[in-house]
Length: 562
Figure 1 (cartoon, helix red, strand yellow):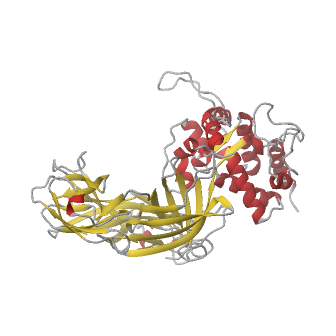
Figure 2: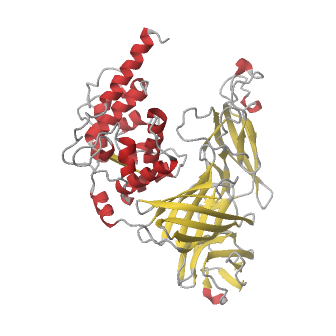
Figure 3: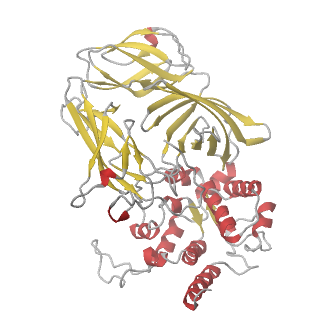
């Protein structure tokens, strides 16, 4: 039986939550909002979200989100309020809301890092105080991918306080008295309450109605993407990728597509084959899944450009979406497309075979390829099975150090080749990485590191504007203790570093073999050692934090093995 104190606590939280909902039968705002016409949405949600005489539904009609945002809302309603939705019904509702109350391309582009699930340290350019209020629990991208009325932003904060009472102490309330002194710029202090400041800022920067959404919703339609596309991209830990993607449209749904993809990792000559399905929401938001159910399954998030000739985004997997590829697709038409050259970095004075990737390439004549001054094309072979051309180049001993544009088949690829005179230094990326222990109660989170080589450039000085980024270099990997305390012993417990640059964290949960039965968490230095052509060694390091699992998550876990 709950104690009187606990009962009062939950009752107070419930009161706040109920207060966040408008009264039934009354429109939330007389002038804005979107009438709901989808019957599945109305039938599934009207028990809590009132429908007025104009077809507006409380809360729902007064916000816009990405497909991920609407999916999260539907999942939360089903989990917390027992909304009786079938999987098919839930998908229908998410699709309807994404298409009718989504974001315009110009609105979603600044927050692509959120939907592409990139683990980055985003620097919000808006109000830093509002950023502090929001990022105590989630990324600012969660906020940037929504649009609401001012009243709805206020209701969202009230809902947060009802569902998650601790937010008051984490960021919603002031930590002390309001400021009274002018700031460094001499302006009067901002004495608004953090919640009022957040509502004012968010309703101004991310309002429900915008010129961008009005313009896009007027012209929005399903994109015409059927055809062959040249694929280029990059996977951390494995290097660049090149290949093709064939897209076909579902004859019964012009926003649904089937895909087949084949691409090569030229660094290792590994070939990957994929097939999958995708939906395009809001006329440009590609959401797909390839090789479903297999160990190689990837989720696909891409942005379809307005010209419908380019798409870009990220294909990813992992319990924390931490493993994946950055991809770019270019439509293959009548003209040839050049997407990349491998290896891109070539030493002067050394003959080298490179592979030219793209779409619609033919062997042609030597004169059809122009790599610029100091680089001579010796021969061009017939296209390989992957469509690439193998080209032998001679790099002059006195060739100028720097980038070369490739002119081929009537098209130009800027910076296709880098002429250098050796690797002068290396750097490990990312500079700070994070892995999560797991494998017991929760999945593991992996961290991939790479060693990037640099040439000092024409001036011969390191870390100046003319330095050349040569790309991945071969290294041996190791870890060293990051001494945070006396007798630090993290290396014995946190996990191991693979020679592919992937850190494999240890098991989650208390470890009885460790002092205090602590978890297998800690810090380490990740060390990369590169041997140059003359036999000397170059070293670089980066920081690694091995931490606990993410214990709160609305999405289902997807365990993978390494």
